Image (cartoon, rainbow, N blue to C red; front, side, top):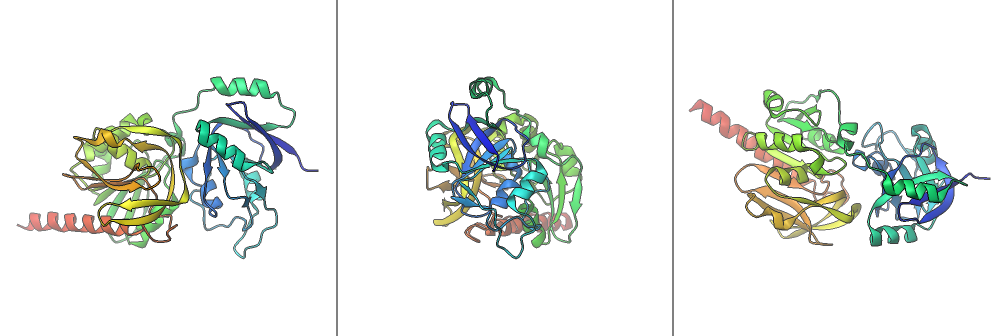
Length: 367
């Protein structure tokens, strides 16, 4: 007989299901993802640090887990919720079952609950605190604890690299500020022969410029961008000195550094099928997204930032470009290949900008 497990929300909603994976329970923010595949990438995406993820697709686990598709080595997700946990794996690349992997990492899973009902609650009430618990736990006491529990605000510090490291290559030199970077971003840079220097989130502008980069990339990551005032200051000190490209959290930080504002969405954008309109070429791109916060459109006046992309679901800001400096950003993930290649060209465009600026600077020195 399979072990029973509870999922308890701050709102007082409770679901009982079957336990799988690990049994290390932590309070997390409960969110949902609408992707039909890609659960391995979702579990290992550090932007989910401190969150319990609900998958809307009814069956999860059928192709197992492999050693090639991880976005990070050490996942930071606090829990995984599925309608049906498929225990029988059928895929030639599979190395572990979903249950085996989550158990090895201590991440609790729960299945056999009505995920449609659960997601409707999140859509109506918004994301909230939640925790898993053993069958027979004092639900009322746990709900009271959730109501008073203070969620951490140092998620980026928790997932960022502690040491500088490099991925050697012979092309443009990019300094990547690691706020919880996905391996897919590093892969896209490396495939374009860029030399990548990955630095901790709190690296100063002076230290970054000492590497003499051709560009700085601000990565994705978890949490509220306003919890990183030192990073916002660093970006301000880099503006005008080097081309900057921001992805997801990096996009939000650029807006704040330029004087804009961000806001928390009711239930965020998480999935692999989000349509975004590119206002530059008037084409729609199918994108992968994972974020709780968005840039406030009305706050952009006077910042020098222009909206280049917008979401077709809710008209939220999905891309920015600075009118004076070579600064660009997108809210979605161009490396995720869900279109499958709709947004991938952004890396090529940024590389061209870096090359052109580098050539202009070298020609200026020769004169």
